[in-house]
Image (cartoon, rainbow, N blue to C red; front, side, top):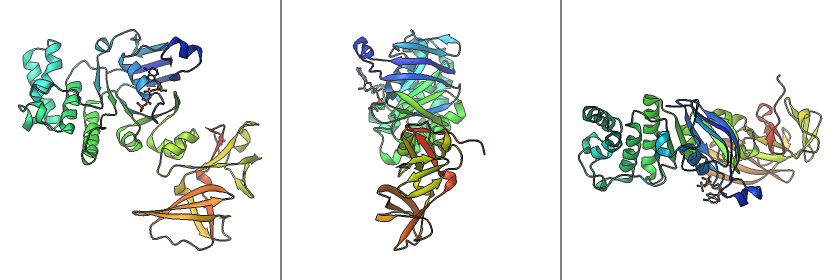
Length: 360
Ligand code: ATP
């Protein structure tokens, strides 16, 4: 497996688009560590597939270099990069048996027969298809076929990385969870570099050690699921990760306080660093907004309450701005309510980017 270095990558699909400044990838400078499990997460059109294709070699970037360990592979084809890929739709040979499908990439590489037999038998067990080894692939379910696609990548001894492009799209919802946990387990066993593209945050957060959040052709944050939840570096991350997403309130900054309507809210650290003239916003996760009786916090109007299993989502307004709170199912709701914003969970944003706190 390899460390993958994306060295100042930019990509425009045509020279005309480049001249007009329309880059599908505006600037990516990032290293995927050897053996890491990464998810590329972001909304449709943000550039995930473009980036994945640049890593695999299906696409050559307009600018910058791709390196596997120290080797510059920018101009190499996917075959020469030794990349395995799993796409949305399983790529299997229907007329071959499961065993033959798994043996195929090894035969192509002239691996000795005895080694092929051992590797394939081992892989059949790991992906849980040994009982169906001699069945033709055409009769199998979508998730079984996707396991074959995955097995074909893992069975090769020379793979630098495995890339997944929305691999669970055609899988039944109840099988998705199982396949995802199996994938995670296989990563634990093989320790291969994996990059997994998805627009589904649950998939990203359960699969990856590190999630790379993309927005409008840029990486806006790379972090563990906890980091993305607790300290979103960009308001988009706050909104995109979590359900419901982070509250983002327009505010003015005065000294170390944020002013929202008539409320003055102290921000622990950092407020003074907000650039003069920047659009400033206050972010707080709904989980850290408490609803309390009137007189004990900031005055809110409750617009709607939704029951969602073990929690209730309270949709309120604070000086005309939307404020969402998540409370426990049994928690009481006062008729006249105020809201308390947990100070430790407040984040200040200037022009959508997090204003780092001063060390306390
Ligand atoms: P999705 O989740 O919908 O697949 P994505 O995040 O993978 O989206 P990309 O497919 O990488 O996004 O697209 C990034 C941008 O590049 C989009 O604006 C898209 O319209 C544009 N784009 C993608 N492929 C081409 C192409 N072949 N020619 C021109 N523009 C393209």
